[in-house]
Length: 104
Length: 251
Image (cartoon, rainbow over all chains, first blue to last red; front, side, top):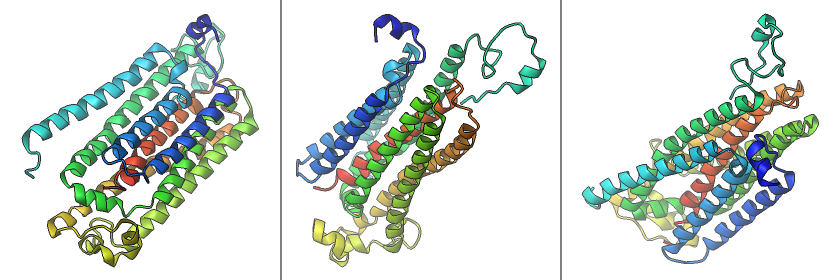
């Protein structure tokens, strides 16, 4: 698809081939993350599992939810959501870590 | 999620401009209507992110505070069922995405098949979840209902889990906190399951409407926006699965 079409076309139809590739990739990643959890990586077990989860979620958002093909408004909305979510977690954590950590 | 048929308007309307029957009068074009409802759906999903975000944050903080209790609590979950359910849910997201394609390309019977498969896979997911919940019930691991700390005070009394993890006994004050793990487990997976039950209800409604040809006439907004909801529920599970089932296996 050329760039001009991308700007004008409001309703991009994502092809079944892409859905199939993404669906397959998600299943393979699920198997991978389950398999990796059986290997002892210390603290990196959580890091790897969450990294794979973030990657899987990105695939779902970009392709199944069509954000890759959506308007800038939609992209901005999604980014704003992630930003606020991380901001709220960050502020909550900064409060807990700096005040009562380990003294419950 | 506008599903406009504009019957009220059609009766009163003067034939001053041509537009499809599903385009509401306050929109200039079908595209504008689609963009507006799509944007509204995304805003709703952001509120859902905030809702589940609170639960995830609680899990993050409490898991760090009561780490041994959360680790031994999650050893009670079956990685087999968790992984199987993840695969089922991802497949249902795939069939839902295909449903959107069928609506866009106006394939009515294929759309009905996709929606039907999505319902079926959603029910399989809930079935597996109920097997897991039942096991928790039998082992008295449902918080507030005769909760038992036996598996954590004396892990060898729970041979099935013990032979895999060889957990050390927890002190009484820490074993007490496993109830908090299960509280969050049921709160998070329960709210997720509630979203799926609501989704399956809407899918049933959509199947009835799709049979009447509602979504294969060029008006795909409802199917598209429901797809966003269903994929969002999938994403929540994509994070619940590693956090609840996987990351505590080795610690």
